[in-house]
Every structure is written in C-alpha cells, then in structure tokens.
Length: 221
Image (cartoon, rainbow, N blue to C red; front, side, top):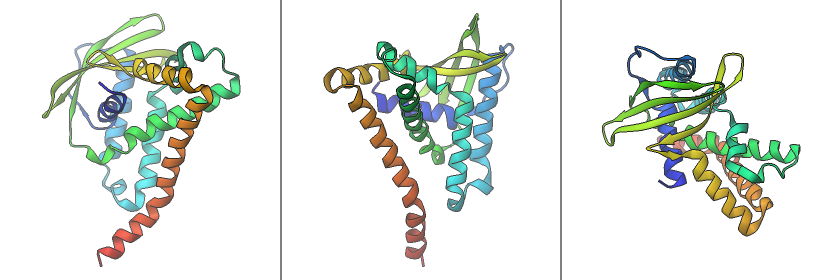
C-alpha cells in the first residue's frame, strides 16, 4: 500500500465511522480511542457545522480532536528514525509541526465523505506504557479491514496513538522509508522544504475557500 493510499485509509478510519456496539472487554486505551472517534462522528453529523460557511470552524474542531488522538511528536520521531537524533530541538519542533499539519490535512479533507462506515473494537494488549488496540473496519466496498492502533501512555492514564497499521502496513514504516530516501538523496533540508511546501499549499487553499464559496454562490444565481 502506497503512502497516499495509507493516509486516505487512515482518514476514513479516524473520521468516517460509527462505533459498532460495545465490547465485552476493553482496556483504557480502547475506551479513550473510541471516545475520540465518537467525538469526531458527532462533529460530522452536526447539521449546524455542515454548511459551507462553517467549513473553517468544522475543520478546526476536527483538528483539535486529531490532537487528542495522535502524539505527533512520537510519530515524527519514529518516522525520522536515526535522523531524529541529529536534529536540534528547534529542528525537531519544526518538522513535527510540519508533519502534523500534513497528516491532519490529509484526513480533514475527506470528512465530507462520511457515510456511516462501522468499526469493531476487538480489544487491546497492554504492556507497561505500550498498547495495541485491535479493530476491524467494516465497509461495503472492501469488506472487513483489520486495523491496529499503537498507543502509548503519555501522562497518568492518558493514551495517544503514534502509529496505525492497516492490513499489516504501518504508517510510520511507510513514512520512514520516504523520509530516509529524501534525506539520503537530497539532504534533511530538502525534506523540510517539501513539507513546508505542502503546508503552504494547504494555507493557500484555506485562503481561497471564501473566494471559491463566493464564486459558487454567484454561479448559482
């Protein structure tokens, strides 16, 4: 599965599902993940946020939920692999912010496609501060897709996701291969420039949104 396809599937999982029933047993990581997913579904199903005039507000709300699901710093650290150690604190903060923006925008752009897909929580395995939450995404098109969320305890009883494996394919493994290739062939700065360019594309799309909305309104007259 390519990186783009993997991100799209994660988008579906995190924002386009309805929890399918309660489990006979589930640990704290499963329950916290389920709670955040249900929050996202409520946003998507809220008719007051469905209008085009509230697109920015809706996406900002989904972005806040994403930050309650993901530990983007850990995802970035693991995706960079050995290249993380050589980075300064400022460089780590910069690339974490850019990578988080990329991941968030990758699935926020898909939220309007919500059509009631279901996810089954199959339980979790907890070892110390690490956990794997096993789920199964049920879709009409693709049948049942196994999805594992790798989570870790960050403070007290709070758990955050740092990796997602879909049919055995890891988000981190995909990006680590991509990042490593760019760094080895063009250098670390080239990677930062690519991520920064993606961020600018997203910001420009945000700025163009009111213009696009006005144009659509005028064409409908």
